[in-house]
Image 1 (cartoon, rainbow, N blue to C red):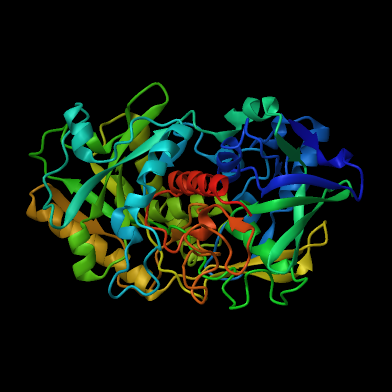
Image 2 (image 1 turned 90 degrees about the horizontal axis):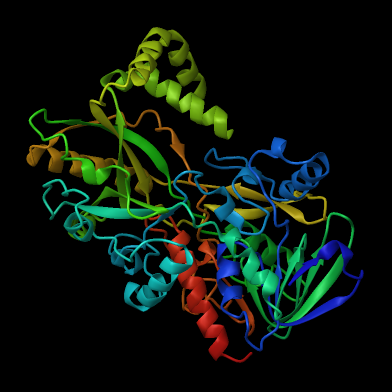
Amino acid sequence: MFTDARYIAAGSTLQADICIVGAGIAGISIAREFIGRSERVVLLEGGDLEFTKSLRDLPTVLRRHTLGEQALASGLNAGQPYYPLRFTRVRAFGGSSRAWHERRGVHARPLDAIDFRTRDGLPEHGWPIDRAQLEPFYQRAQQVCGLGPFAYDAKTWEAQGYGTPLPLDPKLVESVIFQFGRNSRFDRYEDDFARAENVNLVLHATAVHLADSGGRVVRTDCATLSGNRFGVHARTFVLAAGAIETARLLLVSRDSQPAGIGNDRDLVGRSFMEHPDVTTGYLIPDPKLDQNAFRLYQHQRAGEHVTVEAMFRLSDSALSTERLLNAVLRLRHTYRSGMTPAVRSAQIVRRSVHHGVATPGLARHALRTILGAPQIIRHYATWRSGRPPEVFGIDVMAEQAPTMSSRVRLARRRDRLGVPMTILDWRLTSMDWGSIRRTMEIFGDAVREAGVGTVISTLGDGKHSPAVFGNWHHLGTTRMHNDPTRGVVDENCRVHEMTNLYIAGGSVFPTGGYANPSLTIVALSLRLADHLRSTPN
């Protein structure tokens, strides 16, 4: 069933067995597991059922309303240049899935087994659970996300005729598969909730405060932009509002804990992680190679709504020996004309302006773009000519090392509901940059030794930081660790020292690997749902 929070009696309290804050992929995954059961569930969503990237397509009244609620996601950036925060999250049913790539959909791959392990030389690495424990939930998540078979190794897809992995030394580099689901957005589950008698999806309801007593949350206070306020009383509470909003809700809830719920040790909001996305160079194929040698690394259909594509990662052996963070390297078709500094700078300027990111050295790139206009024109003329691409650009999506200085904290400024806004202080470290550079070196060596071609790095000598972008993957602000001095939640995602408060979503990741987090978020959410069904509170 659906309820519009603007018309709930002011000052009233809804009753539930389970209250879930946030109807994104985590909240929806958990709530669906309770449809048709005896538990009464309230699922709070701060936006509406409708959301569109193009507000011009909305009626005037709805456009004004959407702008208002989406603006509640605004915040300030204080560290590494980043996107305006209101653009990186979606306040609507389906959450971040509403912003997935329009043609490709969700980008899916599980974390690698090594991502869960404690590793020498990498501080704060290691999950309290391993990949094997999450495996059955990954397989269930695969179905929830509307993807193909649960197969992410290159050999499976090679056997089905999708192409052969390049013959790189397996001791150094391996090929891995990503799946892309075009029919995966979670708003497709709207009808499930419309029919559910025991799950109440409350729209336009923003949770603004948690009231706690004796190590238990007893109520969440909610507000709407229309001025209405009410509460939800439940036996169990689950925060599934994303890494930034979940941290904010904990930090502002200070009834009995002066630093915020779960924050006695100053860990809430700390260790914020993203997946740094960097253009790192080019691969020039050996002209003797068959033209189909790279077919596995191109987008191919694997079903009505699913496509697959192979990418590269360093082997576990190489990562362990070199003490490197994990990363994946993607190939994209381009031309030799695109390798000029002017074209590279033009691409950085375009992406920076389009996404509103104040990339370091942007003025330098803009000047190089203007002076190199003839080269840019020739490149785009070549692009439009339809000629077969000659080279591959290399983009790296990397794991970020958790660091306490990378964090979400509260601002003095408040939003329209009276809640302190957030400040994102995203920090990258020398370990992050060193791992990316060394990964490119090892990959280049493997490509050369295999006779596949030549890799040219564009990372430079380190005098200027490469242009780095995020992927809207917000991780780590309530990290999982069984030791309460090192994490906010335990292995079951329960907030330490709170008996009935759980957290779902990317904020519980102790480390992020390189894989897009959606599949892992859903898997963890299904695991949490099973735990809640078997654990009375």
